[in-house]
Image (cartoon, rainbow, N blue to C red):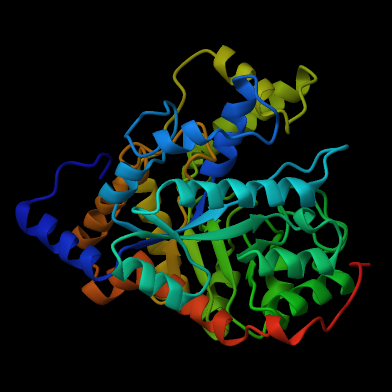
Length: 402
């Protein structure tokens, strides 16, 4: 299985029936930041995303270079999207302000298309929005730097509708280690434990994508509610730090959490991962900071030979590994569209989710397991956090994260 041939009529009918019953709930899409980057490239202020650009997303490919727009979301049978409000962690940049600006982008995107999108916060909201024929739009923060070391900022983000926070991005925060940085705490610091406890108290999901394996294990030991991995793969299938080891996947059933399989090529394909690591080494030799995306891409463009590509089959391997180790009630989908420059063959954009469901159906997946993967598992985890939402009770832990 290397491509994505058109499914048979019977298979296509089965996939359509399943996705009518449970549309895709995707854990991570970076459209908001992709739009902000485009605004900067076109000469606007760093926080500017024009209403004209938001309006154009109603037409397929009207904003070239994106993986996401409303027609393709509809064709992909996306019922609910967790929009990432990632911001870079850079000197001189206020991450709290930038995150609020990105929340504003998501809100304005929804307001620009009230017939196609609606904001959702709870699982019941998702049910209501989907029943109205629209796509439920939720918000997730990517990286603990977004709260600026403040539990007050964390609570405020929750009040603004943020439903999950990835504890780190690509660099450590003061209280937790990233998968892609040198370890400092070898897990969560005591302050990190306080952050996790406060997130659970206010009904914000703990997202363990991007964190070190030690943080994954530590968080699972102390978590009272199901966690999620919003966009991660299985490390046994592609041995990179961003993916989840089998022992962590095996611990998910006891916690009740879900690992949402990502489509990022260098996380799902061993060949792409090796090529990516070689490119980073070449970039470092040229003095290019690995965090300089454009600089690294320039190095990649100069490399001779054909660049390896990930495929839908690679993603299938990860989804099936997660199901095998964690179980069918602990796997979901988190494509990371518009957060990468390339996508797997067969999963080119958000319209292609049905192709993945069809591929798994052909491999013998039951209807129940496909419904759980498509969105049932993610909604169960969201509903568990809703049950623990004490945001109206006021703060239990005031002040800064120390």
